[in-house]
Image (cartoon, rainbow, N blue to C red; front, side):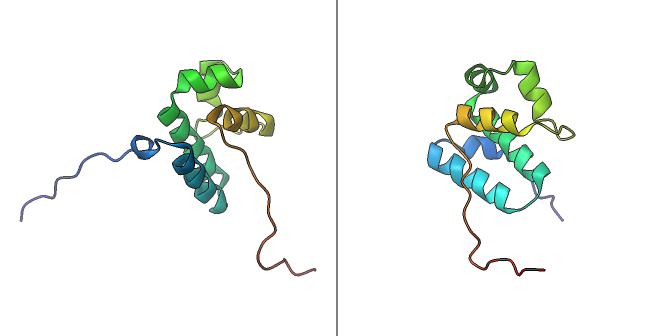
Length: 102
């Protein structure tokens, strides 16, 4: 049996415009896992260029890397600054089915 050869996949290679980035982050946020969303932020930062995101957000490059590490717990204002530097923002909307009262 021959071995299947695969190539490395990096989603950052496919995040080339604001619409794709917004859709990617929206889906990551909708998953409800903070770690997954944080990983997606790191992917977008790599796609856009870490140095540029760091400069635009006012964070040092080292601080940006630390904030986006898998074991990090960045402050909400840090996440907002990174999102703003990426050219996107969070939007809150009501669920289609409201939660039932306790």
